[in-house]
Image 1 (spheres, rainbow, N blue to C red):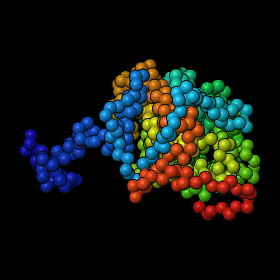
Image 2: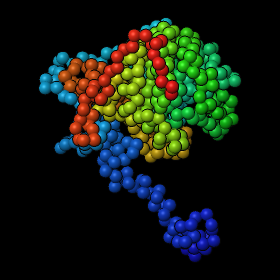
Image 3: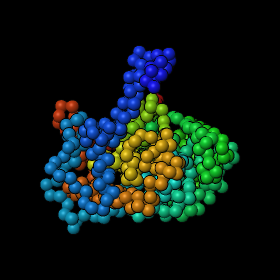
Length: 481
Ligand SMILES: Cc1cc2nc3c(=O)[nH]c(=O)nc-3n(C[C@H](O)[C@H](O)[C@H](O)COP(=O)(O)O)c2cc1C
């Protein structure tokens, strides 16, 4: 046997290592594969792995249980790296009896059916297709229990989203899955049908997402099952192509027209989702809103981080395109503030905000809401196997293999989803009380200091001072990017 392998390795020309080191060279690829697996369990330190380290994953795991989420002895987090956020605790923290319960926040005051969003922590867009049916069902049931919303992602509204009874945000991706006519254009009739579900509270027009800005997608024919074809409104068994942009949105004017159309047809709050790179367009958008009237503004703006997750995307886009939420959140919040639109346009932040300190940072910096995708995947039992694009997810979350899906019991996991959300809210509240305010949304930039390269930390309100509100946006010279 070894002799046969030896000869095969020597005569083949594809792999230089096996040709030069017959038989023994074969162990390299085996060890590379096993190394990825073993490092996670035996060698990687608690704060070392990417995209999420063990300490973060373990926090989510503990938060999915009802019992107290405490750790012992002391923090394993190093507080010296540049950019670390440190909350400014108050000498006289808020007494428990003075703490204020989470308050709902209205989104879309000018539409026929504004939404009173109960929770500041919610489930980010992940499509049915990227996620399995038991995963979608567990999320929708968990969201209902916790009182948070769940975003459909771009794959359309499935029965599994509705079954749990949660508030739903219907996402409109570039292929308009679920709300398209036969040619792939937006259908008012389909929009009306989706909006007729009371549970569907808002619509989100997706311009881009952090992991793949400017990239469309192809859903291969094999994945276009009868069920997925019906939900997305596409022919069964044929490749389905998503354009890399909404073909009809090529300017801020087009974007506002589209928002107005969706809002008018559905009567529900309509917002946008984007990862920020160039940002001159946001100034242009705000100036155009000031011309058209504040009613014309998107009801919310979901800002995704350049290091956001996805089911599948090219590494080049995933790694280096788009600003991270650390930079883009204060930037967008300040532009909206400058144009007097900060209260009108609710800000939803996303991107690796899976533990209380990150969510608290986002709220203090300028977000009204935080959404998470991968945090909720961890609550479903994700082990960061990084196989979402392979249909071999070992936890049944991102696979259509029914044998693997069997491991995911929607009933049991929905409780974990709800616990994660409720424990998150609770611990963000604890941080706010430590800072001396009665609820998280009263935290501001003065409550967070950011560690600098000289080792000192500087308050965020000094690093990012609020700009002056401009009197006449028309007179403003807009940057040319
Ligand atoms: C499996 C998976 C599927 C996703 N599908 C969508 C999608 O359909 N639409 C979208 O806008 N974002 C999608 N995202 C991105 C998330 O909504 C979110 O913007 C991003 O992952 C950042 O949040 P996180 O760091 O909490 O995961 C997906 C992410 C994952 C992990």
